Image (tube, rainbow, N blue to C red):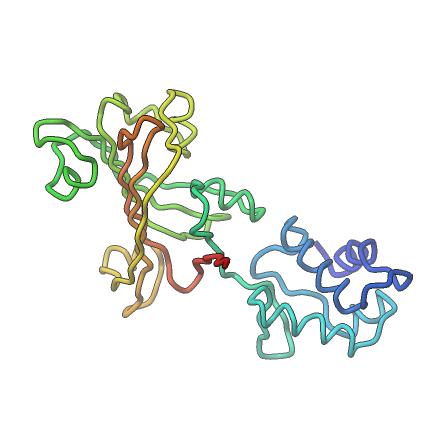
Length: 248
């Protein structure tokens, strides 16, 4: 979308007649443009001068709105006086959503590249996480997760084979498959830690040497407390932020 189209979109959300300060209106309008993908991740926003002239407001007001979004992490200042929509993604730890749901909520197209899908015996760690005996077979699904084609995470999901008798039947979304087979989890327990990326992980995620990954381990439960899934997801630390809301 070109600068004039972006300014036209923002103009419909900013009104001098409103009692709300103009910098707040513009900040909210820019957030809406980002949330609805009018401004995509990594996109350069119009200059302060163009925004001021196009919206009929002062550059001081425009700068105040932009600085507020920079402090929130939604916009980044770049060399050459350019301001871009932050490429970082936020993941709430308070709700149980799939990767595909997270990306669509942000106006991004989720995707996956299958690395492997197999049926095998569980490892000791998988036995403990799923609460199953050594003789029970599991389905192990390993995928590279993408957002608008950009590699974001490596996901390894392990499930008792009784829930997924044919791993080849799973499309891009495991949760859509589970929902269609009456096995969608209703709650989860998860933990997070930072780990250095292996050479293979750096290659798959296109990250530089010495990169660290944010590793999330999740155990998912059905309504009857059966454990349906154990997943380890390794996120790129340079594009992903985890958010926790605290209340008193």
